[in-house]
Image (cartoon, rainbow, N blue to C red; front, side):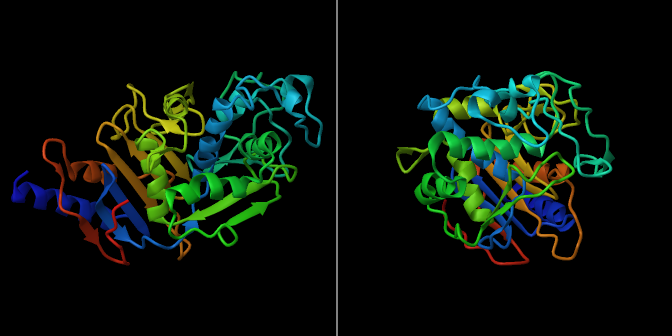
Length: 340
């Protein structure tokens, strides 16, 4: 890459970043820091990225045959108020991982909320779809997974995240006592107090380490943390969601980019995405991990997705023939320039 080409790509990156409310951004290529923006060491709420993190834990359970993908809610003793119907109790672990359980308990709200279009929406009528028949983004499915994990392995979910992921990945800014919280609430996406929302806070650089773990097939420091087969299985496009790109395909708790996707991310990429612009994207074809966090400190809310111009600018920093450019750090905030 010529200096002129490099400077143009970096200018495009800076221009894209200035247009959007990003508190912290980190880009790794082959495990090395390619670019950083803003705060790297402050834990922020990652919202629904938590779901992909819990998905990593299930890979270990499946590999050790402690639970099967076709294990049903009835077999696991899962119920709620009002009681689940026999059809609802026939939903399997796999259906929950795909957010396709068909369990639509009555909401405690006048309407649901479409987080993808940022507007009120209708909640599905109970019994309108059999398990596995239809994708619907439901926090009931996701929160029940936390309960299932604890029942199967006998370890509290946050303890498992700390011992099985944070410790071996050497998270630098994580404190499980300060950065975790259970919320026993109803919400407009189907959650009930019976199964809590397990909220997590992570820094940009620690979240990048989790993404790098997936890019490297679940191996960190020569230790297999997450089964490679599970990573391949869970991050591929499985479900057609009926949503717009990049939410067109869902795997097991990951948004996957398929061949027919219009996202600037290439096919084979996959992302964990949280409400209001919390994003972790893994791009195997580039050897790249992208993390973006928006703190909403002034009440402003970013879109659910990373803006296309930022994605294009980030991938533009990568020269596929000569490797990564010189590390680029953009203010405001501080970055450490560490090697992950």
